[in-house]
Amino acid sequence: MSIRATTPRGRGSSVVLVVDDHSINRRIILDMLTHRSDGYPIFWPLSAYRFPTPISYWEPAFHGVAFSLICDGAIVAASFRLAADRLRRPVGD
Image 1 (spheres, rainbow, N blue to C red):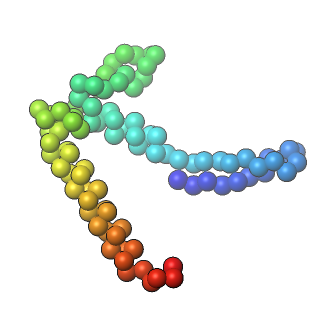
Image 2 (image 1 turned 135 degrees about the vertical axis):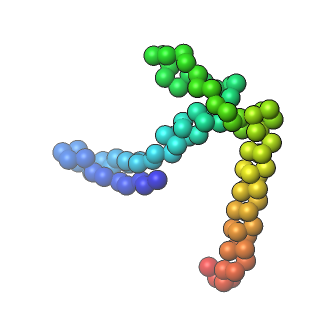
């Protein structure tokens, strides 16, 4: 994500924040791929079609347990990594 401040031409000293963030697109794709029975219609109001996927992030019948273990494991690993980096940092920083 990048945020930059720009001054519009001919507008005096006003500042406009421009946010270039593609995370919403990644979120929509991830939701399309991990919602089995509770997915939402992505192209609503043009279509009510829901994409059936073989994976669900919470339904055990569709790999929900494995998905949870991987997700929780990644969170624990990232937490340990951040804690280790914090402990290695000098006291004054």
